[in-house]
Image (tube, rainbow, N blue to C red; front, side, top):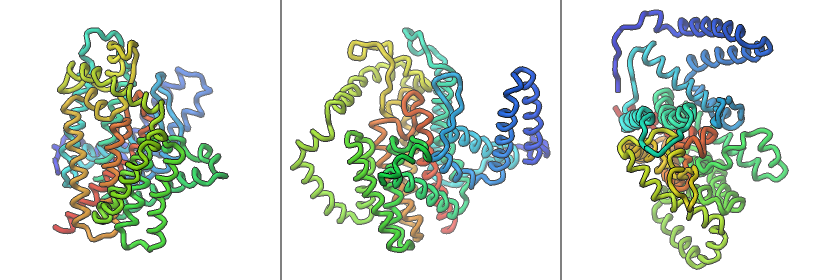
Length: 471
């Protein structure tokens, strides 16, 4: 897809060096104004912040592909947050993603003067979904519920909007920036390295104390981390014949160990261990459907014979109460959906609207704990249908790639992404992991969910490269 823009920008505006000089000059001017209004004790902190921002701008502009990969160590290691004066804080991964998307758009619109996207079935539903969320943002300022007296703060609404838009936008950035297989390969192994190390320091008893010291304590409670760890490692183990056998064995073992670990550590966390189990079974079926039947039938039989003991172990009173309260919210979700079924109530708004309805005799704010209800209430039918279209496009790309590619890494990647997609979509019925809701999983959850969208962008990039070779 290519759209050429008219030549209405001066030549200097299309020069990245000009923008760097402009940014530094504007930054110096703003710093002078800030110093005049604030105590001088803030000067060192401000200078350091501007220096880091200038350096980041240069890196993002010159090395965009490597900057995307830098999100991996940032997401696993950096917990620094920027306060907004509300309950919504911005972490480094979120801010870095905003910068990456901004630089990518600026280069297209100002420097290159054309909107160029690699050919893929993902582009159109991605643009439609972003447009649907933007429409919902505009609609959010209308009084959809006459009885509502409160609304979320503007930063919270903006945060909810950006969580949706940035997720899809960073996928497009990755798809159009990683213009060769080497970048997707580099991202995959960097992610697998950090994810494996993060997993091992939890398994080894004497090293567990170092988890919070070294790593951000976010991935362990996010189903996407576990689904990606299992699916991408087992995908390479089963389908990448170019990797030596002992490495394939270790990667395959990683998926099984992840399932055993999370099941033993947190058996009540259905979204966690079920995501890993789904990823493993999908990959086994993709590898050999006969082996999938061979493994599935005895597994189902064992579950059936031990149903009572398994139910008592995994579905305790807390879990049953949690499931019941979620079902109770469905009539309220339906009433809110009817208020504006087409474009939704807008980002974050439903969290304040639900308190107008009785929830077990109480009038309080709550979250749906369901990705699809969240999308439906915030962006309406347009948002939900375009999101499902987008997911179908990712699945179609992965399915075509697993069939057409002869490269071992690409086949492992495509099959791993298919398994991850099924697992993550299943987890969406239990919580908003894939597209975090600002008042639940929140911006902290974006530190993990962004990795799925980067992997999806890598899948689109591999698909475009494969089609280019065939042409």
